[in-house]
Image (cartoon, rainbow, N blue to C red; front, side, top):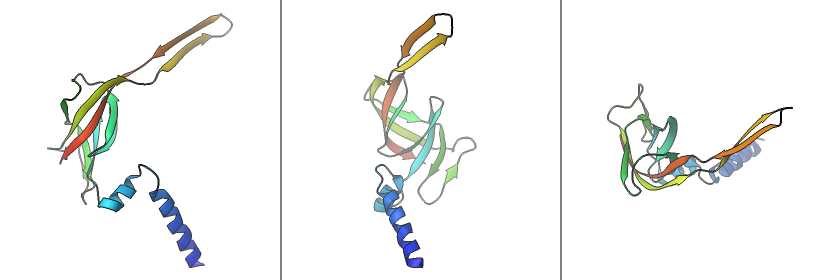
Length: 136
């Protein structure tokens, strides 16, 4: 009976590890991957070298380098460093690939029984960044 439980557990682990984009699969193949949690545009992102992010618009040209100084946590190298609130001396570098606008969001205002209907749309300006280095 323990064999069937172990087999089921192994099958579940294999199924989870084969999910595309799963970081545990990458870590199992190449060892632990250095990652950081950064804050930009009022949001927090978990990044590793080579990741591509769509973040709030930065006023920089496409193709230029950008440095994120607000690093909240660094981990993956065997030890985890959590900042209070920031990790001292840590930074994440990236390269801006392009500026674009996100998907359209429909804003619909409606007041019942008053024939009031307003439909407007909004597309948020965003920047696509590829992470090039994590300096911990």
